[in-house]
Length: 463
Image 1 (cartoon, rainbow, N blue to C red):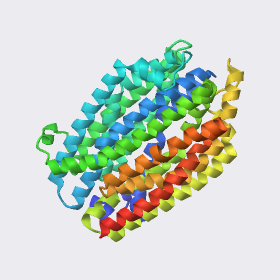
Image 2 (image 1 turned 60 degrees about the vertical axis):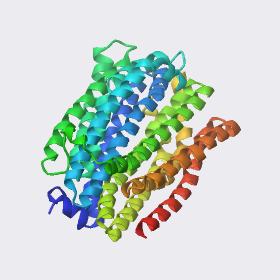
Image 3 (image 1 turned 120 degrees about the vertical axis):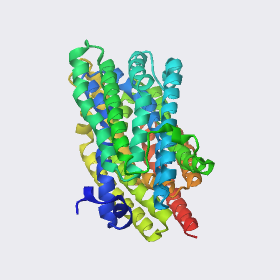
Image 4 (image 1 turned 180 degrees about the vertical axis):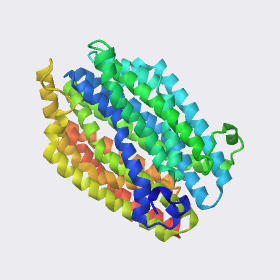
């Protein structure tokens, strides 16, 4: 029987763990990789201009666009994890009410974020590191991608989480992937054909907005169709009577997940601010590196997201053997991916970073300096891949079993207690290379804490 023909019960309860992870994880990995196109394709085509200031501007705005992911995690991960556990307990009607509550919350949160960003866009971008040379481009991108586009983006990501956690990984991944593919087609059209030279950032922003709206439309249709056979609904009135205990369970996982991603964004802000203090070319170089290193991260996050519903379902159903097998298998696969990524990025650092910025355009000298810096930073930061996997894997495992308190503790220790202080310390001691080295050092220390925390949490839940 093919993976697409497996019943959701078979997938969660009986299919071998490697096969179940493949069925849930492969579409998610593909989606994660294609979803990178939303920012990476923009960076690639902007890089064809050879304008390092445009590249620096997109680095500044990356933090704001990544906050969409944090906000979507609040209701998407929190609601999705809870629905998977309710499915394990055969409480589908409660699952439908949770899904309505999550969808409604995502819509309201998206509209609120757009409003706040629109009102305070200038000061926010200055705080994030925009200079006089980059503020105009940063405002163009933020207006269309965040102020106008956050609501459909947050809703899309939330819908995809809910679909994935009810066993509809392919539909969730296809919806996000369609947006990425469309963005690939629209970027050069808007940037180099429809708009005049000098407006490439505006063109990239409009292409991304259209792609996000299209993706949201598809996922709404897929969600409605899936609701005929899964505990999902778009009838938002179902959210009104949601039991207080279920709301608490949703936020117990959703808030730490959002905080985790939010703290990751705070760390990115710190990188941007410290890099910009050196100069705009260093900022642009870190912007390139942070996009490249997201490739292995995306694969590993896809593996962990594929693992999460299997763990949540079997935890709720009381099948600890299958739950632990899923956790171990996903971690092994992620470590193999991480090892391979280190090898490739160490060997190909210069040609990979050169893809993101042309060194033969009008600002060839600045572009050459930026690419040289980016290659050096990448060779250091890529060493963090295995320990980053340990941290991601721990976070998703804790969320799957509903342990929001441990998820929050891990997030705070990882970012606020270790990585961000190390970032400032190493930058002060060793300059821009110290700033690059802070990532593997910080993630390594956090991974030691993560392994201890996961073992402790699983032992407590078992007892």
